[in-house]
Amino acid sequence: MMKKFKLVSCLGIIALIVFMICGNAPAKTVLRMNHQFPAAAAGSKIDQWFVDEIKKATGGEIEIQIFWSNALGSAKENLTLLGAGAIDGPDTPILMGFRRPSDRREAFSVARRLAEASGGEVVAVNLVTPVDYRVELEFATPGRRTTVHVTPEGTEAERAWCEQVNHENENIEWADLRWAHRLVFRGAA
Image (cartoon, rainbow, N blue to C red):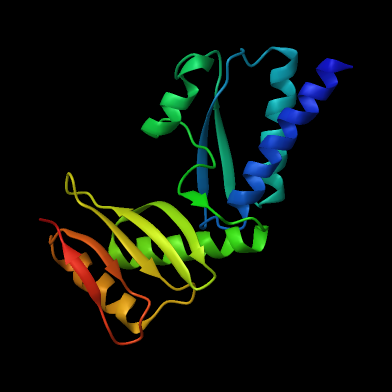
């Protein structure tokens, strides 16, 4: 009975992760999963079935690659692997303060909009108020990290800032982009 409970709990967590990702998936997303058991193990067959069902349910838009028998590292190393980007999980970007699924979808939408427009990677989105999202962006240049405040729907100031930051290598420490026609920012010291 306890094994069934653990299995159902595990599958429920995986389903939640997939649900969070499905609503925001681009044309095709390939996720990497480290598995501690070999593919022939009884529990592994259930995991493979579940992965196949996800692929079917999303019309191939989401595919999960399973690395069997700790191929990427031990189970104890999974958090390290997740942080290094060797495996995928629901932690990128980190969402703080978003309780309802619709709020999380909106946060992912804001993250995607900023990443595409600025050329940066969104590390975290924090709900300050319903009209103020604090977003942490990281850029390819070492040490180039910016915190911006934006609205869920975006502003002209945000669009102008994203265009500027996408073309220049200027390190701006933070920016308030919530205003329609006003930029407020501070460069790094």
